Length: 435
Image 1: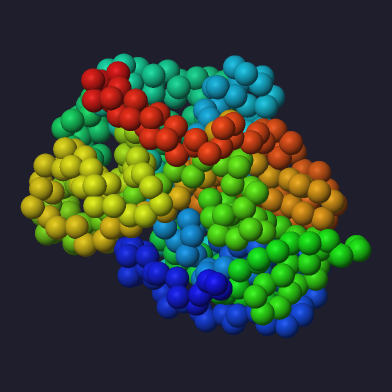
Image 2 (image 1 turned 60 degrees about the vertical axis):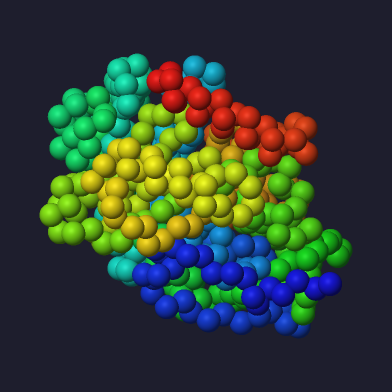
């Protein structure tokens, strides 16, 4: 039975409801030639296409659904210069030089988003560097956040961070439940789907073919070429880039990469527009905010709506229990939202790796990949497109711990889902008892 790739469900997200109209791209049919075939039209694939075309080579982008249908259109729109693995942890395990290189890569990733927004004139992305506050839920986590901030200032030369007391976080959030926090003014917010659609439109206007509703069902070698086969045609290219991340298992051509990832469902809710007096009270500075709990929640204000997200939604489909848990957590932080209805509920997959960092590089002499953004992908995936173009040119850029040769397969892969549930349940217990 052939899957109907033209009938994929839309996402009931705030971004989908408020995005600029999507440009229509054709379905690939017949035989095509390219220097590079790129599988996946998210941030990674489109950024790679842009940088490869800028180098004078000819890429073709193939998307199984529609550009932005996956994580690039479902995320929270928060841009931060970090990895899930802290720079202090990198320093302790891998040394100061590696920590500094990872710090450079992280800041390069936020810069490139600004560059791409400017390059393609994506004003609808509403990119604003408002900063982010890490809000501590108890004195233990506050001390840890302050120690981390002080270490960053002392060892990495990061003079940006600022310590906030309880009143400072209350003024920032409008909530009384936090004991203090740390402000990083370098972080930013963006409309993620408008950013994605702006990239797709800009890349297409510069002559790069993009095909949607075109799954790559097989990747094979043919002499000195790699062939991406689709239901109605094929692309013969010198090199291939796999940019499918947590959605790599959509087809057998990329499913083998799933064994290096732990897909973790992240759910998001958005309220109706708040009354003016309440909107002015909550998050008045327009920053994004995260908690210090293990099952981290994050929140931000967009268009007078509270957007509230977090991990811990289980299974492959949306569930009301996951959204209910988010709403309960949101009202716990903001009691004034108890009577405000939710207008949007959606979720998507976060690609977690064993070592908590993304990976990029060559799988073989014809195939490249970038994946595993661990929940910080808007900026990092945009940057990986630049590095993929360097690999295509035959270079070996210094990607630090992101080197694909460091990537490890998930042990006992068939048990990954019950293992995720067990770990998440333990984290929820520790959060509940204040540890």
